[in-house]
Amino acid sequence: MSEYAVRLTSRNMVAEGTMAFCFEKPSGFVFKPGQAIDLILPGAHADPNSSDVRHTFSIISAPHEGELAVATRMRDSVFKRTLGKLPGGTEVMIDGPFGALTLHKNMARPAVLIAGGIGVTPFMSMLRHAAMHQQQQDLLLLYSNRRPEDTAFLGELQQLERENPRFRLMATMTDIAHSTQDWHGATSKIDGAWIKQAIAGLVAPIFYVSGPPAMVAAIRQVLTDADIDEDEVRSEEFYGY
Image (cartoon, rainbow, N blue to C red; front, side):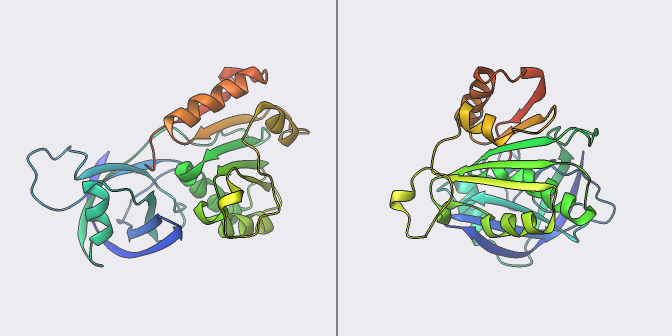
């Protein structure tokens, strides 16, 4: 891994309480969709590895894009309060790329991506990359959130589905009763029956799970209970939080 100095170029809200931050892309910076960086904020600190100044994020931008972007829930932590107040043009450090949650090379085997909330971040880079290059690989995203307004990148994902005939989005909203937006899709939690129905017709898929640690553990158990071989399941619990 290498460290680079980059500047904040823009920020935008991608769901209620969730922001995306765009930075300059260093010359020669190469990464694979699904990989991550450490973002290191400016300012003196006794421990440069403290969570107050350093945090790991999946890269949501695709390799062909001219900027590096990350997204995060804006929780009440020292790091995120500081990040949220950074003026445009502020110089920060990034360290990376790293991470092994990348798509398998055999495109004849479909990829089933399962995300809870902001766990969708590593999959955004994969799906943007696949749409840009029209990859000949079946991709299915099972995406669980409480409400549409909490669902990061929902509109973009629906657009990517229209652009890429090999990509299918199946989203579910588990607390739609408290939503102010219309939703005509699924409302159940991700369970074995739903997964089996979703993957019907896919031959030898490989599963990728990303989200909060408890969600990842629960989905791995659901997959095991659905007779999915654990060797066909890959997961990360921490990128993007």
